[in-house]
Length: 278
Image (cartoon, rainbow, N blue to C red):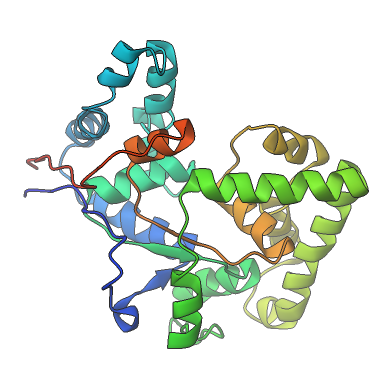
């Protein structure tokens, strides 16, 4: 089997009616299935490492010019390269850093669109997939909602900048501790709406509490994020929902994200190809 890299998905000619927005659960489930279908996990990981290297083919020019140090470049690559252990854990059902997920999706030629989602409905879908797959409360996004979400396409770097600005503003007006409590109440409110349905489906109170904790940041995590630390995608979704910010994340090229971080505008094709033989 040959796997070719994903191409740029930023074309304005994209047919909105054909866009399939996914929740993290749906995307993870699809990618985990694809990983587990590969005959060699070792070869797949080697391919992912090589794939990321190819995406940074032109980056050495930046080092030569003194725009960025080799150490900074290597650090940026590392943020997008899942280790073998991360790959194994992800294949076994454990969520991983969103930038790793993007690398796996690109390398496995999987196009995705992620927008604001309700974590309680994601939990319900997880339960329904194990019981009655057709019984799911969440409705498909209508074309108007797709248009709104699609128009909010941002890179992870841009989304982080927006959410960090909103987070600092809220914390400056109140405190990081109050922001933690308000966000937890916000997340709990999402689950209260579907609590009776979830309990009928066999989800326990403890299961719901664990899910709430999966989407709730501590005051220290919020502070660290506001100062530049990375957080998992589920926390990003909580921050975006709390700050009432509509976003759309789709396949992105990490080298182009690096240029964005550095404030460099260059012509980039958004196309990188590599073959992986299974």
